[in-house]
Length: 327
Image (cartoon, rainbow, N blue to C red; front, side, top):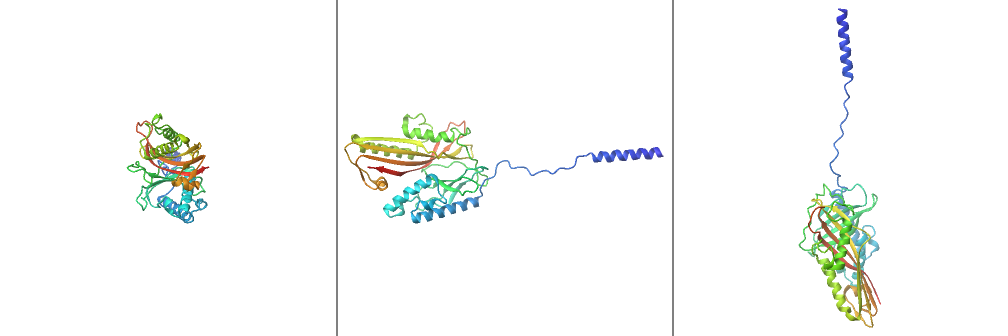
């Protein structure tokens, strides 16, 4: 009987030890999201647009470039400053580009670092001109989003398929190999086409667009006016501000870049009569020896993903004189 009890006791002890050796339950963390969530909600983006619009409205009322500083930067500041000079000279606000507050499309970033970029396709302005593609940039976590640029969408273009704002769009680095052409190279190749026209090795890379057609038309007009009475030279360079890019739904990207160009005219024993906005910015309609016009262009592209043989679509552009000097 003692042996039976002893055996039973040993069996119970072994069972208890076995039970104690079972692993303790461990908490299971919630699954991590497959992608980074947007850095902004739709409500935050709409609030930002409202704040930018309020700053523009205040600055426009004063025609004051200094009043733009709280929420406008980069090429947008250059464009608006030139528009203020034109508006002040004309005594009317007709020279000011209408920037609607309402948005048709929000392209919100999924970035966890800075700078961050968001893009907006606006509602059509009240004058029924083309909608604008706005690019807004936040330089650091304590900075507001600034309106960095706008471009007018060209007639007939279709914006690419984009992720819903609740999902967000990934930023694309300037040297990304995930696109048919890296964003930084897109602007450089476009500048080469503008400079060399059909002789450019990149002429077939881009779809036709009215921006460069207009630039060429203006260049040819100046050449015709100057004729044998002087010389004309033009230079085109990518702006050091670089490019901004956000992914599209098909793995491509919307890329926004900036180009600076200069038209330099030297006269020989002649007088050149000028008009339009050039004369307004210069302050006179006649030059006798030289004329220099600095232009700023912002261009938006749709770049296909790597491996695609599709052309880069030129989505929209903005081109304006920002400075004129002469004698």
